[in-house]
Image 1 (cartoon, helix red, strand yellow):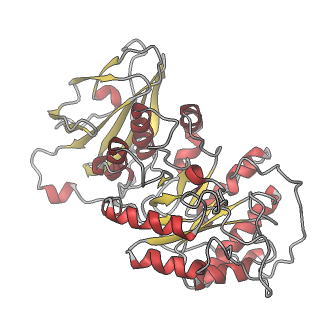
Image 2: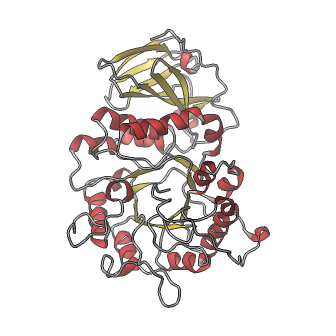
Image 3: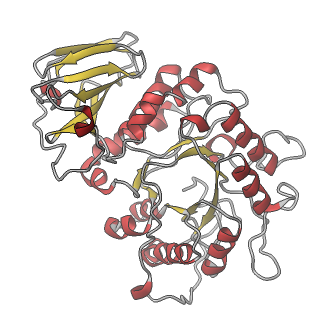
Length: 448
């Protein structure tokens, strides 16, 4: 979704669909078993097409080649970031003679297949952007009327990830259109992650998205505002996901994820503490981790946040449960996510303590593990994922105290510790029918 979608009048056309609803099948691509990770151009570089005056920062093949190199050489690929995703503004303003999509000839002189080949040559995967509308949000050709042709074009270019936006289309058409394009992607035989903006446009139109269908046809989807380079924007996303979690959380799982939008860590709008908070909460929310930052100039402390292996492991936990906000009072929040290992239906957990206060002094938070819903009698091995502090094995009765900086976070991992079993038995990442939230969270309102 792009904020400039109203910059021109909405154009509707009648699409003569060649595939009836009863043959539009689910995507069935077997991809995105954990949330996708990679680098995305939009938030940091937007639609800068002025390669004459700003050649180092314009949307061009040179920019994407450079970021590809840095994802590998600076260690991002080694911790799981694998996609290089082109966003809007890569196209010519008109299709080719035969109706085909054409990359801007000046900014992408070697074409998208060549760029895809380059990304793959570095061991990474290639993503691209289009729009289920007459135009993309920035006014370039959309896919309406060309769904099958464009899907095949992406397959021919060896694309691994397709984001389909929703500007200049009618939200009511999306219930048919997004599955139809996914059908054509699937029919190419080239497995491509399918990222949809389907629900957010319907929500803004006052519709109730059919998440059963969205889950069936999309690997991930947007359901709230575009992220901007500000703490206010990040907070609005945190609030949306927390306030609507009963409707949002059940939709997430292996192969299908809620997408709260890009990581803006290392840009201009967030403090160091706020960057740590975004990374921690995106991991708790099982969010795609798509960096949008200039990797040429990022400072070491922000690079360290993005490459924190322990927090990435929470985000990539194979169970695929999305976390929840379990406490909110006086601008203090606690978020919890069930993760592996599991033992006798007791889950391990990642727990984030978030200080939303701005009064300039750290806040002390003290709770027992039982109050957080961690009730296994044998205890939990607890560690701080930013500070590398190991608390040892704590029982449910143990009160743990953390000090959280303003607009900051403390994120802990609590691994269940069976006392008399071999580790191989409880470490298997198996989904169980047990509800990890079938707990009574009893954090007292006056605890802190």
